[in-house]
Structure formats: structure tokens, C-alpha cells
Length: 150
Image (cartoon, rainbow, N blue to C red):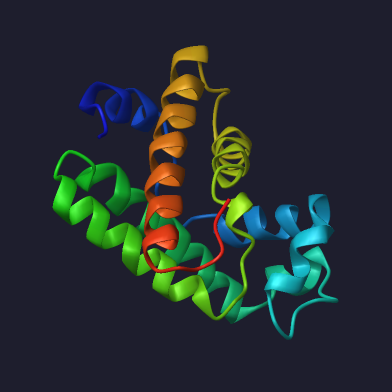
């Protein structure tokens, strides 16, 4: 499953607080407009709209919470898998392309670097490995549920 030292390395210097989170989503909306359609009712939002949105403030907090929990429970395989299933349940109705679970972690690294010092190569590799494990569990679960998977 996960390796504790990778998670520790990945967490070092990570801004796992909600401060500035809407700015991250604002940047995401600006940099990746091809993904706006996943945010029903906000398909035409600009980065400024995201900054002013209570919805995206809450979403940003939820993303931070989910990543923090995943990173802290990854050594407990049953809890980790249960939490990944919860993440999947929350996204079933949104028609999220299963191929996006792996690149999410590239966006995550970009967010971390936008909020603090550049990550070291070791930290980037740790988040990449963490994302690979997360994606594998997502795809395995989607397969078991007979849902589309990558």
C-alpha cells in the first residue's frame, strides 16, 4: 500500500490548510477550462467568480481535507480503501472521467508549489507515488462496481 516515509516527505512544507484555497481553484479554472463541465452550474465561471464563490470555498476545504485524510490513513489499508470508496461515491453522479484520478496529483503538486517553496524532487516523487497508489485503488474499485474505469 503506501509507504509512511513517502507521505512524511510529501507533507514536509505542504500547505495543508484552507488558507488561499479558492485561489487554487481559481487558477485551476483558468488553467484547465476543459474541466469546467464537471462543475455543474459553474461551467462558465471565471477565476474571479470562483474566488467569490462560497461553493468553491467549501470545495477547496473538502479537497484539502480529503488529501490530508488519505495521506494520514494510507498505512491502514482497510481505512484507506474505505475512504477511497467514499471519494468515489461522491463523484459517481458527476460523471468524472476515471482517467483524471491520476493527473489530479499533478494538479495537486502545482497547488502545493503555488502556495510555498518549490517541492524537492523527492517530494514530487513521493506525491507521484502516492497518486499512483490512489489511482490504482480508484480503478480497482470502479472495476468491482462495474463502472467505467481507465
